[in-house]
Length: 164
Ligand code: ADP
Image 1: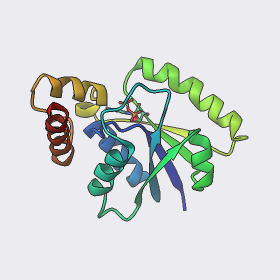
Image 2 (image 1 turned 120 degrees about the vertical axis):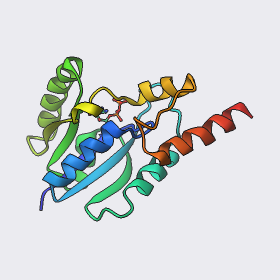
Image 3 (image 1 turned 180 degrees about the horizontal axis):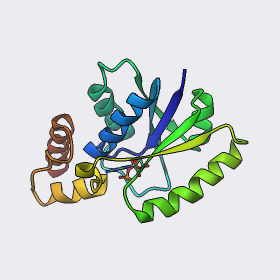
């Protein structure tokens, strides 16, 4: 059985992420989505619990998709969860440069136990990023092309709670 890890901040999960998850779940026996608590990243819109809750709701009926929260090195999370590879999504050349370095380091620190598999989102989803979604939402524009209605709903609630 081949289990893979898909780590990310998912703040929030977008249709780009979901397209990568769909592809990975068709290719591998089990996909473990790891919502990472990452202190090096700028402050997040959603708390770790909120991000987890949204993703769990989206995949509640999928038997081969598991959602966990984690911190630290993705390779350690992969080893702990018996995942043979880390899934990364590629959007652009700038993603590529970073991912080349990352996969090499991950291979080295895991003594070649954890590999990296890069997937490309389908063309309609390639340009979507969490930061772009937040930007468009701030401008009061419709984000349903970029996120699931569950996420849009949570963003509306978040906006109201931030105003109050
Ligand atoms: P972001 O980079 O948008 O802040 P994450 O850290 O949550 O998002 O990303 C997790 C992984 O998903 C990374 O490998 C990232 O490159 C990938 N990813 C995010 N959006 C897309 C997309 N639209 N197409 C392909 N891969 C994507």
